[in-house]
Length: 319
Length: 319
Image: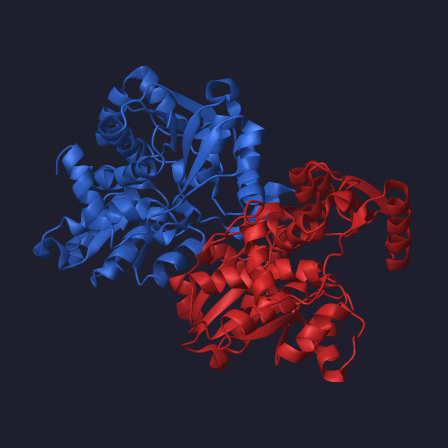
């Protein structure tokens, strides 16, 4: 595994195409009116497994040799990477072993189980997750696919912004959420290679602004977890951080209130479901209206695995 | 105005194309697996104004002569036709006068006002709605566009099924919801002219099954209003009923529980927002699994104007 290049991202795009959806870039005249920008929503909520994670998971899995694949794939994850890896394993007709904290909502376990993944529950600490994963790998001989600190995963995530710029050229900006940094670093590399005039801006919940602080301090800072954007709680990986430090100039942080407002706008105006993490990019764009006025902006809607039973609480009881 | 013909529906399709979206026909492998059918979801929730009503409203308005249009358009409506007509009037740069019961949720009034429509509130009875509309028309000189009992509206709604069959040929069935009967009668005519081997089946909430009872008794029966599918509460119009009586052989009725389950499946699996009325077709397909097993079925998702603040209540608190 090595740092993705222009050629390797193009190869990844071909490699994974039978395993993923080419997602649409939607426009919405009322959201353009509201924001003053010309927005292209890259709908990874429609992606297989419900998020962009299917891209990185399939690229990394497909690059394994037969011996590495034969005993299956393994990871620890509480969220979208777990579902993505289970789905890829199903397509490759191999096993998926997913370590999940026992506190994870039933709906997420159901998602993994629905794709045929084998779930191993553990205590909800990073130590327990890592030690349980080591045991599972020792027992099964499966190969670990890390959710983001893996160049082949980053290379796969880069295909999202590549698809977007192929469909919508001459973007002034691409806005990407940042959690572990796989999607953001992949997007940054894709624009560097395929559309250098497009600036990639990171978008992060204020309640877990470790990327913002890391970029400021020059070293990886620990994430807090005080946000509803549950897909963006992880620390940056060092591989992603090295790329982000070089390529990203700006991170916009947004509050949970701003995330919920943006999510509601997407549900009501675009008539599509995004999860809170997927709405962070629109929240950031709305926060800086002058910056994006009249600009062509690609917004990555990273996923759609929202828990509908808690949505009513987010949206309250407006009349 | 006269009964739509093959040629007049084709003309309507051209006439309205600058004013409406050509909506996609989505597929979803997990919903195909669950149902055993091969489903094509015709996404009128993505239509301008959030429902198929934009088709009929624009066709009928565009067929008016200059004199009929100059003083604006008028209707009484508590729902999607109101928004559609306001949007069409805005595009034609004429006025829209919309009579709405004062009990209508604020969100629906906001929708109409957002498109620049002039709202006249009245008591929530059919008598009050009709008398207020007569007064408004007398004062303004506007032309009434009825939501469904109007051949030009039916002709416009027919373009939805026409678009679907052009994109997805050889459908065994098209499932359409029925309220006033505009969409259903339009769909029936479209299949009769453009795909006679495709059977159109009507889908209706059990709590407002007037179309089911009307087809049985041979005369228009009064609608009840005991359903969450608020777009389907109206009585059949006589123009639609004459078409439906000739062309429709089967109406499937579904309970509110079945509608909510289908709506949840669409939100969770397709990741798109449909309103309760828009989920009636999937509920009907799920209710008759043997009938649709292995069949190619077009499901019309009629609209997406769901009130998000009450969704939490529908979906309850599953873990």
